[in-house]
Structures are given as C-alpha cells and as structure tokens.
Length: 84
Image (cartoon, rainbow, N blue to C red; front, top):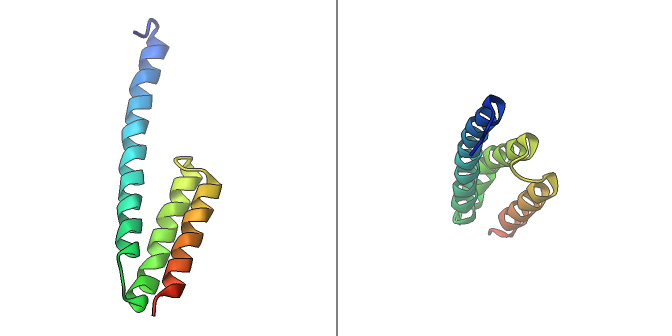
C-alpha cells in the first residue's frame, strides 16, 4: 500500500485515468466494429470521419500508439474502398 500522501494521490489519479482511458478505448472499439459491420458504402463513408477522429484522439492522449492509430485508419479505409 502507498505510504506517503503523494503516493496515495498518485494511486487515486491513476485509477481515475485508467477508467477514463478504458471508457474511450471501448467506445472507439465499438465504433470501429460497427463501421466494419456496415455493408453500405455510402453509410460507411459518412461514418468514417467520426471514427477517424476518435482514433486520432486516443493516439493524441496516449491511450494507443500513433502507429497503431495509423494502422487502424488504414485498415478501415481499405475496407470502405472494397465495399461495392
């Protein structure tokens, strides 16, 4: 257990940050899943910028690495382009 006041505060902050990051990461994963399950190209193209913004925000705040964000966006773009 944390011995100092500053260590106790750090534990509280890290828990709060963990829950915050977990919420946004899960929300983004759900949005990616929904976009990948879309079979309509027009709907996918319409929803893509919103999902891209979510991915970029995760990379900006450090929840995911910037290269992972780029790979996710690239994969989504390829999926959307292959739709008929």
